[in-house]
Length: 302
Image (cartoon, rainbow, N blue to C red):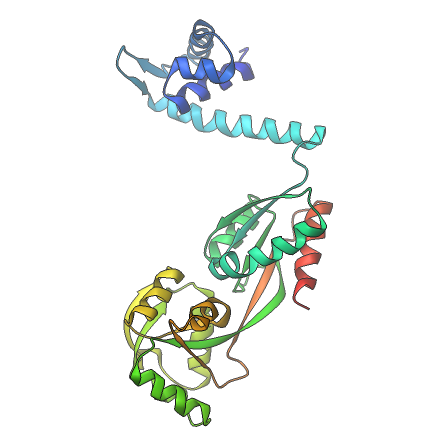
C-alpha cells in the first residue's frame, strides 16, 4: 500500500469543504488532481469513501471512519513538524472554569503579556471537572479552576482566594436587611426563607456552599430553592431581576454591587471562602514557557 499524506489531505479537505472544487482551491491543486487522490485512496482501501452526484456529495460510513483517522494523523504530523522546526513553541493551551475565565484570567493575561509578549494563549471555558479532564488527556497544558478533585495524576496549586457573599436584589426588604447587617446582627438564618438560586452540582461555588451549610448543620433541603442554573451570568441577571438570592464569589458579584444592581452580604465565617487552583499533569513535561506562566500565576496574587 502506497498511501501518502497528500491523498489524506485531499480527502480531509473534500469532507470538510463538502466540495471537490473548494478542496482544490484550499490546497492550491487542480480539481482533477483532487479527484485522482480520492480515487487512489478508494482503490488502495478497497472501499467507497464518497458518493458524488451533480447535486450532492455524500460521505459513506467507511469515509467517516477514514476521516476521523486521517484528521488525527494529519494533526499528529503537524504537531511533530511544529515541535521539531520551532513553530508554535510559544503557545499555551488553557482550560478555565467559569469564574477564573471571566474574572481572573483577563487580569492575569493582561499583566503577563506586558512582561512577555511572544506567547500566545488558547483558552477553553469548561466546568472544573471538564478542565481537569483536558489536562489529563493532554489537550491543554494547564487549567485554572475553583475546585479540587481526588486525582493523583494532577497537581493542584492554590493561587487565589475569594470570599463568598450573599447576593440579593435591591428592594425595600433587602435594604432593611442591609441596615441590620451594619449593626452586626444579621445571621445566615435570616436568609433561610428567602428564594435561593443555586449553581449546578459540580460547580466549585456549589461545593463551597455545601461545605458552608454543613459547617452550620443546615441541610440543603431546608433552603427554598426556586432555580438551579449552570450559567453564572444567568444567575447574576436573575438576582438583579428579582427572582431570588444566591451565594456567589465576591469577585463575580462586585461589579453589580458597585453599580447598585444588587446588594452583597458577607457570610460570617472565616471558612466562607473559595480557593482557585492552577492545575497541571504530573505525567507531562512542561515546556519552559508554560513553567514560566505557571510561576507567574502562582505569584500574581501574593
